[in-house]
Length: 209
Ligand code: URA
Ligand code: SF4
Figure 1 (cartoon, rainbow, N blue to C red):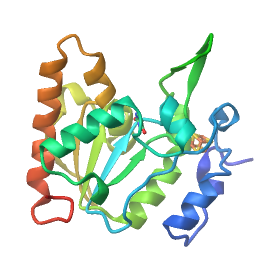
Figure 2 (tube, protein in one colour):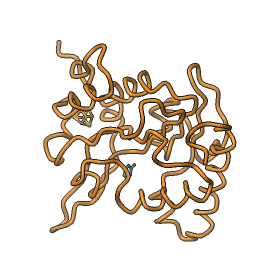
Figure 3 (cartoon, helix red, strand yellow):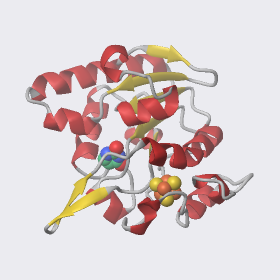
């Protein structure tokens, strides 16, 4: 029987560049069919901290880089505010292809299902295995559940420092949820407060300005 998911596309013993190249040809689930391209993680292989989002959005799909659209701009602003250097962190997503529905000319983001998250997890595992961060930051429930299991609740455990085997994990909300929040200012402040906890964990890391 064919192995479901990305596993068979992930080359063994690859470095990050080889991994990124191989991910371009992944057909581990159906999402590659309609998306423009694979959006792999970006940032230094030596990063102390890995930030994980959900999946590329419309602009990321076109550009091929994570967090370059509206959510990315909010994330940039929040990281700058807490003195974390975006260029020194490794940024990636739980799912590497954009999932959407078409409404006229617009492509509307659709949340990935558990099957797609599980299918794509081999790439995330490989990235974490190479970067070997001290700290993993999960942006939103999809990322948090990919790392901490399907029963993890961001609403009750956001901002807590969680000891996993190979690294510590802090989960917070997704920057898109801040953009959609009824009280955007309060949501932004709560997001920044979680990132301050991240910053405090970084100590003298290169990501800490
Ligand atoms: N949202 C995400 O989760 N990831 C991106 O790369 C962009 C938007
Ligand atoms: Fe492969 Fe992930 Fe894209 Fe699915 S979403 S095709 S598993 S890279």
